[in-house]
Every structure is written in structure tokens, then in C-alpha cells.
Image 1 (cartoon, rainbow, N blue to C red):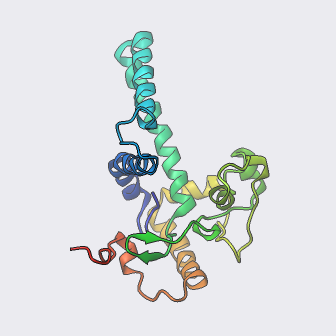
Image 2 (cartoon, rainbow, N blue to C red):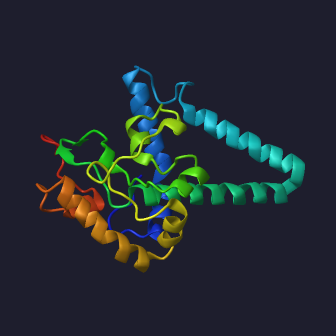
Image 3 (cartoon, rainbow, N blue to C red):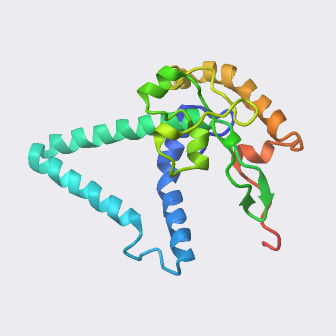
Length: 209
């Protein structure tokens, strides 16, 4: 999921926890449908993920009882929090252009915030080269490229300072909202009304009731 313009991380994170499982299920259901399989087919990876989680919970209980289960749940929550905090920084305010009839343009380099800071790259094995990762998801991390400002928006610094700033919503909005507005003018000058993108409430597809 992408953090919407003006949406703080403190609002984004609960929304992800609430909507993420359903979104994942619908995505896997659509992929299986293209292979003419139903959502309950054994190849649905969600079942594997659930089995792994249940297995680790059982192992935590065997080793540490209910305290072990609690500690496992706590570390899982912290891991998801860190993942979504990074996701918040990587995509805040960016969106693909809506084409109508429920369709969006393909993913481009300018749909992710890039960062060219060496220290961040060394700490996070080039995680900050996020635009290239979306364009070439199978490319090995040492080979990921950095795009310049003309092709992808740039973070003002590396990920550690950015994730810290994201935890202070007024500071984040003051620093980043102008960058999002610049991004809109640079890549989508033809869009004059961004109101539907705030809630993703677009007109229904042609012919829809």
C-alpha cells in the first residue's frame, strides 16, 4: 500500500494492518484466476505463510510457553512496523495515474522515492534504490541502479533520518508535502484535480451501476 498525500504514519500503519490482509488475498486471487485456479487452490502462497506463522507460534510455546508466544508476537509486530515505516518513506504521496475503468498506468521509475546516499546503501544493501527494484524486481541488489531527478523523485537524505522524521508528522509534512507537489507538477502537469487521489474514490467503471 502507498501512503496518501498528507497521511501521517500514525494513520497509515493502522490502515495497513486493517486493509493489508484483504488486499493480499485479492491480489493472490486475481493471479490464480489468470491461471484458471480458484483462491482455495493449494498453490495460494497465503496458506504457506499462515502455516509457517502457526508453526513458529507453536515452537515459541514449546520453548517459552505463553511468554514465548508473547515475545514472538512482539518481535513480529516490531518487524511489521519497521517494514511499513520503510514503505511509508519509499512511496509517500506518489501514485500511478488513473486511466479509467478501474485501470492504472504501469509502474514507472517516478513512482518511488530514490536515495543516492552511500551510507544508507551500505547499511541497507541498496534498499534505497527502490525505483529500479520496482522496474526490475528480479535484479540482484548489488546491481540496482540510481535514477536522477529527471526520472525519479529523490529523498533529501538516507533512510535512517527519513524514518525518524516520519514519526513526527508535522515535521514530515512540512518537509515532504512541497516535494510531492513538485513531483505532481513535473510528471503529471495535465492533472489539475488531485482530490480523487486522496481517497482513491474514482468514478465507477464505464457501464457500472
